[in-house]
Image 1 (cartoon, rainbow, N blue to C red):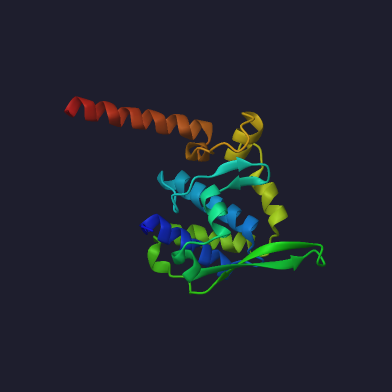
Image 2 (cartoon, helix red, strand yellow):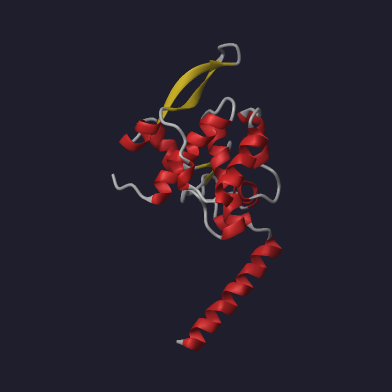
Length: 185
């Protein structure tokens, strides 16, 4: 398996959240990664992990990671483990994320680390159920795709991280840059 920078960031972002939030299960992890990627995209125009998220019923899901968790690639298995633990007085189970190797901050920029720490502090004690609500708020990307456009299990475009006004302004700036480049060519 070819390991690239996005993959290394993904693995170490998962390790960071596993080390820094309570009850870091699969659902909570997916929400944290979604918030990380979309917040960073809103600020910089690029995600942290390079993952795509899809609008599933319970919220945004990075399908590639979802599929891999059941059979981790060697690089993931070296850093992370996943184990079923009982929750709700043993009436259900949660797939808990644990680290085998300590989080390495050298993979991340200061901005990325700041967002990660902000998310860990904000959601440290939250349960996955509470985070599901946070991803389903009106005018947020999941809500737009899943409810407004009624596209179940569809890709959530990163551009939806911008509010409509911000997006329109960004398109104007991009168009102006494109026109300058065309004139110079």
